[in-house]
Image (cartoon, rainbow, N blue to C red):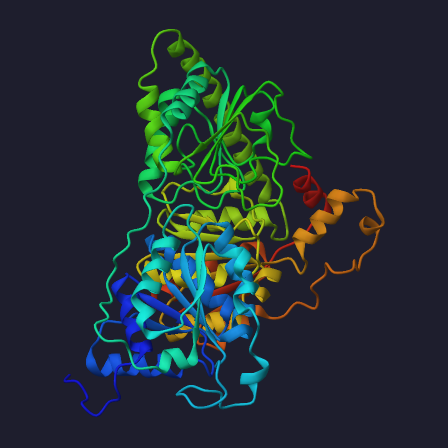
Length: 581
């Protein structure tokens, strides 16, 4: 289509959108307000002129928008952009921003800024709210959770500001950056000779220092009972493969403690489950691999003589106000590069080390066999229940999901009953624990991988935090069929478990209607998705669960998003046992 000659001159907003596209931004997830006119006009002009700009995605809640950018990164490894409405929209997005920051998810988190001027410029204040929405320091709301923040001040800055924002967000340790966009600046004529291209590369990921690498390799080579504990490791398929090579060569058990990603396929001989406690009490070398909390000090006892190595781009998690896990060696390195370097530094085991490794391999194999038998026994007992519990839900979903499915979990449904055999097949909520992540993250991941079967496993409380009406609207509007399974126990299960953990014999154990934990009467969650044309079903009887899963997957195959409202029974004794792990 030819350019519309009657259109106004190119604005800063036009240049900004072009710069985003030139820097690899595929989507701008937005929740608009009165600060957006120049951006909206810019998208319309780009459509008329066939100019390259990101695709705008209308998201009617900020929490969902930020979580979608998060999920898209999980699926592609490419950061995306979000734009929210001045200070109020920014405030609504902060919970999701915290999640992204603590999980080192890069993104360009932006918002408009209430007009600076009261009159005289295109974009000056024109409605009553423009006075009350101005803040002395809008970026101050998010500064602790971003790596960099800035306000666009002049049209001439567009190329350089976008360039710096993207290069910083992609540099290790990665994380969100913040940019505010005043309405008048966006409406100004674009500067001449702006070349919207990337000029600054992201910093290369840190590689391990040679002396530290040698020290770590010596500890591992001489260890009798080493263990690796990983939580966030596994960003790429190559990273998972490399860890498997190291683990297999040196018989290193891998514990995926409170995982955000699967570091090693669960059928790998060195995958040692999801609990640190059985290993750390006897381990003589503990490698903490991209794990902020490798065990719970108040619950788990570590061998006092163990040598402990922490590996990560920020191995001491310097942005956590307090974290005092013992550390004999903090190896600053990208996890994947560190594992690759350890493989080279250690080489192939030989001599006496071979005998020790083979003995360890047998011990690990025996322990893995015990775990498998315990799992089979637990699954067999599930058939005797007349109600659905979390274990039964896990068993049925595992049987139906398929090897290529991607599960995003925001619930306490047990991972030990799942088979995760491929890299990138499981993600869990950020260590920040901001509820409501799962619905938006699933949509972003589905956008990134349209061929994938994407499943959100979420508690009823987290489901409400996820802003389900906006989330289901987006799924329908942009044809993103995902399956949401609400594990509905009509309680804040995590709150109840925490209370029992502190007061196992307290008054709360003897009271039926406990303050701040009950979520009854329970809404008919399955009807919420129906309002957006999705498939919804309530499941109460255990025998109906697997048929319901099949019907839900059929809906996905037909292009419809689906939700199962699964009535899960809650038991205090199980919660108390979980609290003590």
